[in-house]
Length: 407
Ligand code: URA
Image 1 (cartoon, helix red, strand yellow):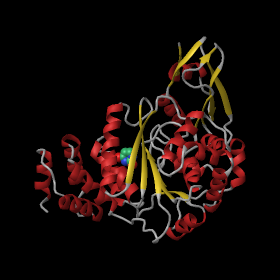
Image 2 (image 1 turned 180 degrees about the horizontal axis):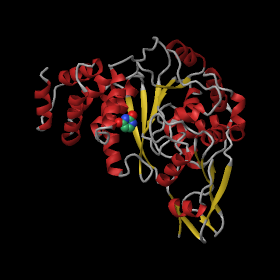
Image 3 (image 1 turned 60 degrees about the horizontal axis):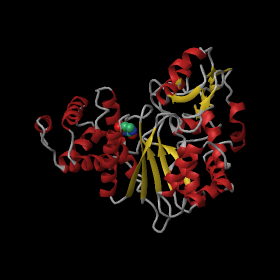
Image 4 (image 1 turned 90 degrees about the horizontal axis):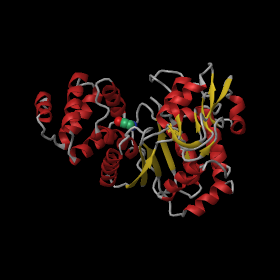
């Protein structure tokens, strides 16, 4: 492969062949293709895009750059969900055990939070003892015994994505649709799934605010998934206000416990059921009953214990992780809550310490934001709207200006 010629072709709007893309990815992971050439290619892709065949070739090349889950013959169907992320999105913690109740296997490889959206692994690590890194034999044994696990990516899982994502992050090439598609789908395809649902968010608190862009992303991911033989579907969901009421790691685990015990906020429950319904041959009401009769809760406890977590902590997350300062932010006037701004609440929660500005930042499990009211509700002046869990003194009036509108 003469790399400069490939880069010139891409720069001028041409397409690379599947073999050329596979060679580029292999060379990059091995260290034969230097960062400066890969960065030039990523920038050319950013401006020129990729056709469907190129996107598929990149996805497969990245999937094949490391270990791929290999399932024993005759084991149950493997299913998973990917969400493009949002504020207060804690669905994975509820969905995995709920699906496991239906006899499928849920081998969920999740990520950490970066920027204003939270990460599933960070939430789980607020449960004392919970391990997100399991060796393969333990993962398999846990699926046989419990039916689900939620773990982080190991060094051997899609290493090309890890390396390329870090490069994109510092070269202004993250926001490229084909690169996003390949990044997300390579990791999901390495799980060797039978079925996958993609929860693609749009709106203020989403990674793709524009609905049309979110639809294009969804369509492209579905095409790649189906092309790889995985039954793939996508749902588009708004992310203008946080999902559920809690934003922050231990707060969100406490909210998941509520849902798994049959309660919890309606939007979170309904979205979880909608996603679950697309992955197993069971209707919403049957799945709702699994939340209400303790089955999903039992599975969640089994998963937490199997991964080393202290299940007795689940009923007292608020005591284990208590922020020293808790203040309420009140409605400035009578009216309707028309804005409960997911982006601002996500940013605020990150500033309080619940999220990361940089990959190496430490997470504070105790801090975050409770949304006491949801968009569209009637409120009176002085009604508490947000409860802020913080380590430092915060200015409620400024937070109100920033995050809510009552009109
Ligand atoms: N999430 C990913 O895993 N990769 C991207 O490129 C963007 C979001």
